[in-house]
Image 1 (cartoon, helix red, strand yellow):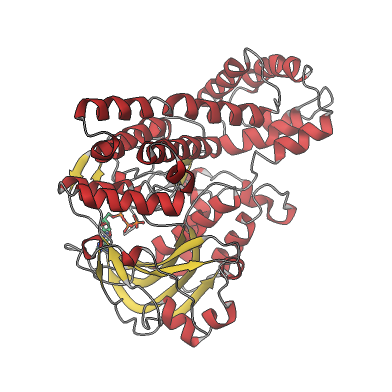
Image 2 (image 1 turned 45 degrees about the horizontal axis):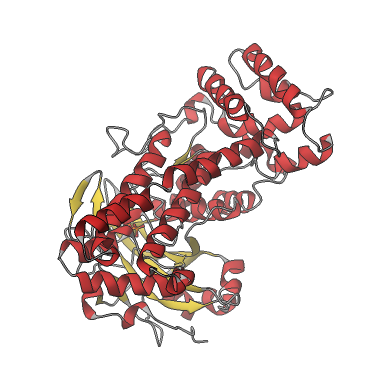
Length: 489
Ligand SMILES: Nc1ncnc2c1ncn2[C@@H]1O[C@H](COP(=O)(O)OP(=O)(O)OP(=O)(O)O)[C@@H](O)[C@H]1O
């Protein structure tokens, strides 16, 4: 079978990318193919999991029609600007148009050196590949815009990190891999034409409505801001911490990208940081909205010459666009919080009620996911509050809050059963708990992929009761706690 590539990014000028060939994997072996995603993309899953397909997924064979490019980008990393980053360990195989008519990139991550590798080896170790597979697919199942994982393969070659690890390649699927940092790459060089070509490409590909707008580039900026203002609250509402929100990790179509040091919070604490490289908590859970706006401001700076030939007017225009972020973020976040509490109408005092719960959760080291999941059971006069109150060090703190909450629920129009179902549809039972992800990785490193398979399967149904897998809901025991995640290289 051939993959029907339909490449558009590769037809941009040469300075947008480098043409490269992936490194030859010496003994490719499939760890996992995401069959439903392959089907969605119109790819033949049987062929992909056969010897020829696995050679493609490992980068050993470049299929006919592939673009095979490494894209150029820059980025602010922890606040410092790096004018040239680029795909140092990833190759964009090409674009395919799926059964749903959506265009998606197929990218091999960990497929060897490129002209952007700087000092790196261009490779990925098995651990981070499994981690990105599990967490990105879990995010997709939670309904959060994200890049996807099509496959994980072992290359058969070692990767030298702190220890020698098995090398692996992740096939990543994204609506594109264009980042805020891609715009910065051209802007930093004073290449306004490059910024314009990129903006036109992004409009055509991700924001077609902007093309018809009176001022397409302003509409593009508005669109990107709106999607980030919708995305980041989705993270907060499930306790997700991206961990490395550098501008090269903010994708302009609004999908979560780069699952290096990310993690889901267990106990609720807005200051939570997992990334071993985030010494100052820049990317802590509660800082994510602020950082998103900071990144969007960097994006707006790159677009200034396109917004208005007059620099002062361009700045005023960009500032005007950026002003929309905070109210838009809050609208999404507050609506999400209401839904999590089972409030489907809007009343004054709702946000104070939600804020009060979060404060009590923080004071009582309550597990974020389980507190919300078990709230559904506690709703209603005959509800069972024990599962949720037992999440609190001092359960009476929950009781005190629940009094006001029940009084508020009494003003909602739904019957208890409808509300219960609605709450369970927004409060997941299963998230990729760090200790579970770690355990699956450790087993994988020993050659046992059964725990990884099981974890992926459980996380594909995050909102369902899965009694056979109830232990996957459990927070870590003290000895299982993961406090730091490795930056995924
Ligand atoms: N082993 C490596 N060899 C070469 N370059 C690397 C390696 N690891 C990371 N890089 C490069 O360092 C930069 C920042 O790395 P980061 O960890 O944010 O990205 P990544 O996880 O490799 O990629 P992505 O953002 O596409 O998920 C990127 O330009 C990336 O390509």
